[in-house]
Image (cartoon, rainbow, N blue to C red; front, side):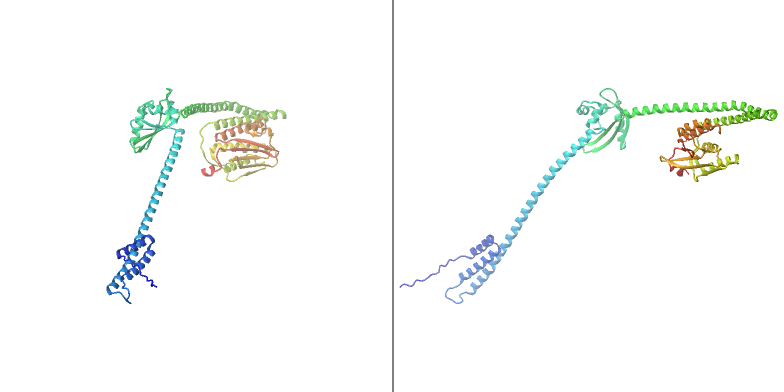
Length: 489
């Protein structure tokens, strides 16, 4: 029986092909696969160099070659692996940059579209504001060409369209074309802006009075002038009406001053003409009482006494008439006045005149006012005298002088317990004057209160009365805020 023998098939591969195999494994599989391939090729190369049938078949040259190949194959695999990783990183970085570039381009395009949309929206809003502004606006070049205008200016000047207005030269829009150049010259001299009230051209033919303001805007296209036009026709009409009303007021005030001067002159004339006969009447009454008093019975002496008293009352009426005339005219001097001190002085004079009376007078401290000292003394004299007279019938009377606040203004008060008067006459002073005209206790009280009213009115205030079963009170203001007195003092 023939013995089967196995003859190994030996394929010889050169070292460069083995190195290429390592390089290919490294490129295809990676660094680990390349190192495995390097080990396999080193083993194969060692096997290739071995001599069959020897225990240690390698020669020194073969060992050296195996050692060199065993070192170079992994080195090649490692180098190729590193190059592959670097190439992969470079490829990834390039891909990342490409993606970032694409994102940047997309973002830029998005921002561009957004900016364009925002710009169109801003322009739309500006145009809406520009056209609906209450002020007419136009932009011109120095030579006079209109490059922009709003609808308001078109409506003000009465043009058919914006194109018609923009086709005109700017100086033609002025009634006096030289005004256009004058305003440009003023702005050109360094002024930030120039403003004038002048007449503008209008399509209807009637000039338009307007307040024109021009300023210079320096842009990329050179100097541009912005004109703002405001219709002031109503303002001029109101000014003319105000001037006419002021002239009429001045005329009326002049007439009033003339009437007051005439009244004062008439009052002085009446007083001068009446004082002589009244003085003679009083002298005759006194002479009759002295010379013939014993020859007359009691009724006759009573008649003569009453006649003398009546002549004295008429003298006081004439004096009140003169005071009313003085209070209506003349210049006022406004100073700080101590009303408390004035009231003390007036009450002391009344006590000296009638020492037999018992009157409790309460005067608030610190009463001050700003006004004419002489006129305020006269007013307080009449008001306190009025309270003194109408409490004459009481055994003990009480008068209070103080202040209060009414509708945010300081009001001064003179109150008495003289019994008061009919509520019908309360309120504004004319009612109280009407009540006093029939009083026999103090003739001339009506003129006195009329004088007080005139003095208060000249100070810009008002006066009124109140009444109750406990007495009457008179209040007056001087037309000043609560804090003005302290400031004036």
